[in-house]
Image 1 (tube, one colour):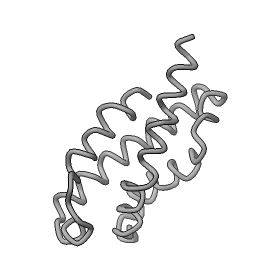
Image 2: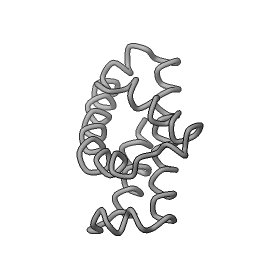
Image 3: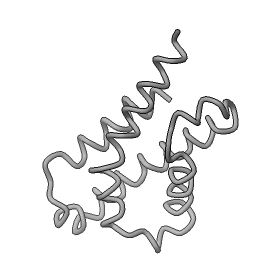
Image 4: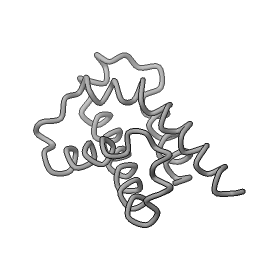
Length: 108
């Protein structure tokens, strides 16, 4: 799960940077890069839910994260760019904080 907090989250933040939604929406390569990281995050959360069901409870929206991953992989034609942008800006920081708490708890 540290991968979610560090590498994947960092990459999304690096890709998006200070860009506006309009640029994100126009840039297919940027959208693809961000979506790929969310696929990896969703898969990590999915694996955690199977391997350590108690641990995944630290992640408030874990079923939604897994569902979002499945949408990106299997229903990519239905991806709403404004939804992805909202997740980047409003939900990813929360997820990263939850992962930090989870890692601290399990390091004790």
